[in-house]
Length: 394
Ligand code: SAH
Image: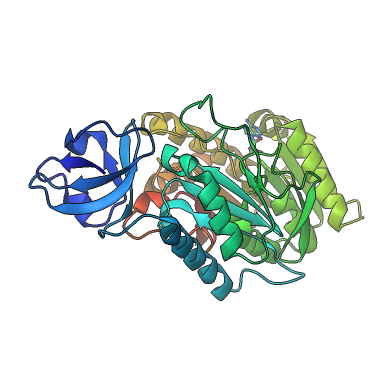
């Protein structure tokens, strides 16, 4: 196995179990490890620190273990079984009520570079690193063997891998095969999941608990679900007896999915959808009488990288300001940022500035994060990507 030596003092974060080795921390590499190969990480004196997947780029090693142990099929199976055991123990898998959840959340489950979402008897697996991509067939086998409910595994990594591997197969089934659209159950509500054509793995599971919270406050309210994607928040608002729900997304495909999901659960006329840009939609409402008294803002990541942070913060400020300006007195706003590069504090500041600019009195009711099937490794604070605030606007 090739060895990667770290510069003196640069081993501190690895000693504190942070799973990433940045290129700037590396003193020298013994030999020429190939993309995705296992390497040993050593300090400048040659003492063992960990084993991980090598990859050219800013993060050069994703650490899998801090002990000298074989990284073999048994290792993968143990990690995946442990991930499954936790979801089961937390009561996430309930027959006839909840059959979709994230089984593996990368660093949060000790498996950097790997995502596995489960929809009933199908798992959708995504590799974010060359190392995980290389061993996709072993991982697929381990997932199916560890989770008795899973009979099909769809591999969807074309868009998530940092390289276009000419030899890599296109997205497709590694186990079984199931091409029809699937209806998943989330807290008793039905959702069509289209993992082949949908964004990410087809559904945003990370908002599950926040959707439950929204249901609690929806009764009698007129709701705007901005950036609705598959309409998750809209469907929960309708079950929570919202008076009226408007769903907005710039993607016509997303609006189509939202309409289908609403129709799958309700036959009444309380829902309307709009395939339109968020800012254009909000502008149209600017001069009208305040109409909404519950607004959800769940935009895509405005900052995918650190150098985009300042523009992203301006974007959050502008978006939230519009919401503050248009919400009725006594209204509630659910506002989110899923940008990993933006801290909780930065997001709060952007939202608070927006509130101040709109001259509304605002109080925090809840501070939200991602669901329990997206656990955060305490040594990898970057894993806390979803940040949300529930606000009362006087
Ligand atoms: N709230 C959703 C997830 C939102 S993902 C859920 O719970 O499932 C972000 C969504 O924003 C995507 O569906 C994307 O199509 C949409 N989007 C991106 N840019 C937009 C824009 N400028 N205006 C409106 N929608 C946009």
